[in-house]
Image (cartoon, rainbow, N blue to C red; front, side):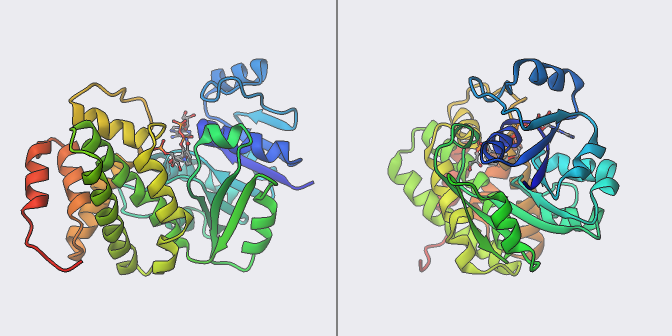
Length: 320
Ligand SMILES: NC(=O)C1=CN([C@@H]2O[C@H](COP(=O)(O)OP(=O)(O)OC[C@H]3O[C@@H](n4cnc5c(N)ncnc54)[C@H](O)[C@@H]3O)[C@@H](O)[C@H]2O)C=CC1
Ligand SMILES: O=C(CO)COP(=O)(O)O
């Protein structure tokens, strides 16, 4: 029985733990907060996944050293926490496959998760697991398909280790395209939420998703990704899911912006920091990213939504 370690016991880390344990894997799930671990040990539930029991073969720990027992380690902390997590604990994790399960671009460095892994754990094999999947769906055992990207020949073995009868992984070697698909779709989900919250209509949302996808493709290709990757689960697939579902936190955050409503700042919204990071990278490299720039402007209060919409609609007419 292969053993899998998961760092980060939020909604996604816990959901993956449930899915993999139910498929017979021995799972070690790490969280930094001793009170949260004590509560999960007692109730066998994760507060973000009410009603879902953590199987017996999930061991809960606050000791990062215990993660080193896994043949594979999944990194399910939020993107902006990944660098700090690996600076603190990378030494015990180095030398094995480290699979980033977070979506975004690090604001401080402009790097994606695989580059953050490589920088902190030079002997590790970086990989990415991402695609259209709400944690609650995975935890309930609903059918889900994800992309597992790894540039190393160990990719097929990882795919086997992390697939289950209901969690179907497709393999890729394009780590750049795969991680950018997951990062950029969150920015578009915020934009989509803004459109709906501001009452701009479903036609405007369809236009936004389509032009947003063109922009995702432009940015990813400029950074060496393959266009086909962006047309897959971790680009198009996750874009469709999060731009159209009220379950998406990025969508709900955008909708609150569009409505001028309050949004709880404790909720993880990966697209906010990523919009800022990508807008800065695109500007520095001369890549046209009007939707991303508008999202960054609105989030930072540099433009009202009305101003952002006016600016987008008054761009010079062009070929599709
Ligand atoms: N929730 C979902 O449906 C899905 C989430 N993801 C991705 O998974 C990643 C994690 O998201 P969620 O689990 O949903 O977030 P969450 O908000 O449910 O949980 C985040 C967890 O990370 C912990 N954490 C925060 N900062 C930390 C740090 N510095 N060191 C260690 N732990 C830290 C928090 O205590 C919390 O337990 C994100 O990148 C998200 O995009 C991917 C697919 C689905
Ligand atoms: O990435 C996700 C689904 O694939 C989850 O989306 P949110 O982070 O917007 O909730």
